[in-house]
Structures are given as C-alpha cells and as structure tokens.
Image 1 (tube, rainbow, N blue to C red):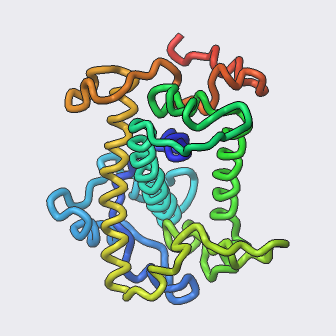
Image 2: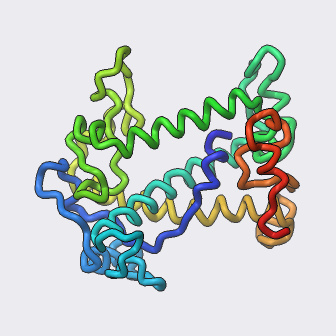
Length: 270
C-alpha cells in the first residue's frame, strides 16, 4: 500500500541515462549534464529509440526560469525518482492484489486481513486508518526534505542535482547528527553497491532507468484498467475495478481531516 500511495507521482520524462562520470563524489569533477551528454548516452539506454525529446524540454528554453543545465538536472532527477516510485508501486500493486498481508493487527480494531479484504490495492488504501495514512505520508515528506536539503547533501559529500550534484543521489541519513543514531541508510542500506566497480555501477544505473520507465507504464496500466475496465485489453478481467478517486490521497473514511470533504466534492470536469 505504501508503494501504491506514491503512484500519484507518475511522470514521464524522455531523458537519457546518467553519465558515467557522475559516479564520482560530488567534490570530484562533477559537472552539470548538457544536451550533448544526453544525446551521446541515449544510445546506451535504448539504441533503437536513441535520444527522444519531442517537446524540447532539454533545450535552452528557460524551463521554469532556470538555466538549461539546471533544468536538465531537474528533469533527470525527476525521471529517476519517478522510476523508483513506479517500481515500488508496481510490486506493491501485485502484492496488494494477491491478498497477501501480515497476520496481525494494524491497530487494536483494524487487522491487516480486513484491509486486504477491501478489494483492489486502491480500496485497501482507502480502508487504511487515517492515522496510518498520515504516518506514511509524513515519512515520505521527511525523505523528500532530507533529499532536497543542502546541509544534509553536503554531509554526504553531495551537491543538489540542480547545482552540480548527481541526479538520483540520495544522501546518507547516517551522516546526520541525529539525537539517536540511524543504523541503516535508505539507499544501499547493507552496502552492497559501495564496493562495486564504476563500470558495474554505470551498468546498474542504465538498467535502473530502463526498469523504471517500464514500471511507469506498468503501474499506469494497472490503475487505468481498474478505473476504466477494458481500457487496457491485455489486462481485461485481471484487475479488480475501483470506483474511488485514484489520485486522491484521502477518501471518505478521512472526512474528519481539514479540507478532505471539499477535496472529494471538487471535480475539475464538473
């Protein structure tokens, strides 16, 4: 369900893969990517498609009022992040749809079994207690703040992705002087990637991007078929229908929260 809640962040950015040189620490000759870098390395990601930017987002068009290199850094980071979210959402959707759940209670009054019985993964999220939803969304917000804060990035020897840093890099939470130490990092918690060669890391980054793009299409197909049965012919009859609002973080069960009632009553198509 945690993975599914993040699926609302889906986005498709036709950007090329990470540069191999960006694997070095932020202080070691890290430079901003250019369109030429993307064009050169796009072939490595997809030799058939190559570089594909139909809207010219990577050009010098003043996107968002920032420099071209900064815009490229933003788009690169957005694609990597959304790909990771989509991969988690895809796996989470499969687990939720299978009915698998923990054998104990989430709260004294709500069991994981009762949530699993709600139906589709989206319906399971609706059945999750409000307090649990707030904790999940709060944790996601905490990770967002950590990944965007210059102080935290500098503790890990990194820079912001729009200021010469590596797109997709997540800082070490263990490097922050918390009152209570954090035993594991969010990224590579067991250190499996730390000692890999630069070549292996570069290959892994290309694989991650390809898998992330595929996962974005996959979770979009799941959500579309559940909301509009038959919209994805290959999934017809395989995905449980859902009548709620897929993109809304809260449902009628959270009506006591501020503005939720107004949010549910609002329709941009009315």
